[in-house]
Image (cartoon, rainbow, N blue to C red; front, top):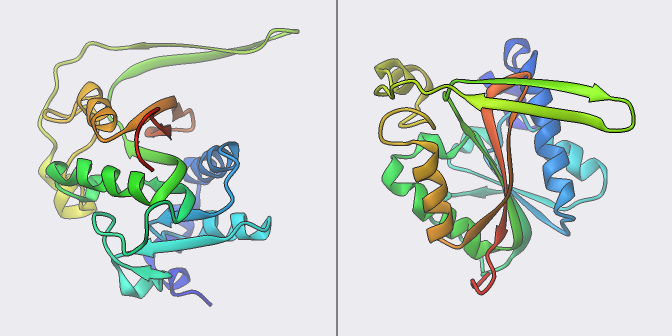
Length: 214
């Protein structure tokens, strides 16, 4: 049994509700990039890697925690692999655990070791209103509006309890700044959305921008 099953990631509370739906979003996004190989940064509960391997995809896991028994024990800012080793990377609910000044370093390294794209999710505390309607023949339509609320500093307990240095929407890390960094290091945003059942999770599908080196 993988050591991840003995950690807090595999409790009933952790897997219940919206987080299970978020795993589904992550898997669907990875498959949409038509990967031939996947690097998953952050072992977590092991749900995503197990699902991808079940359908025949080779998955390599990377984590800094030896207790999670990753395939590669290393930091996302220094991945011991050649350029373009994997076609697709996945890094979900991980980079907020780094100081924000290392965010670009991590994205640059993920750009280096992948050849096709990256599925990324980050915590987003931005307030918005969203509703969806399903119409005959037209399918599902989504409407959303962001609420213009003043930004506040990230609460101290986010670091002491969750280990988060920053989240989208707090002072110093607005969404516009996050996405600017993505572009600077060579990523192009193909799609971005929030999980309706867990809107704290914002997903990105990123591609290598034209003219950038994989």
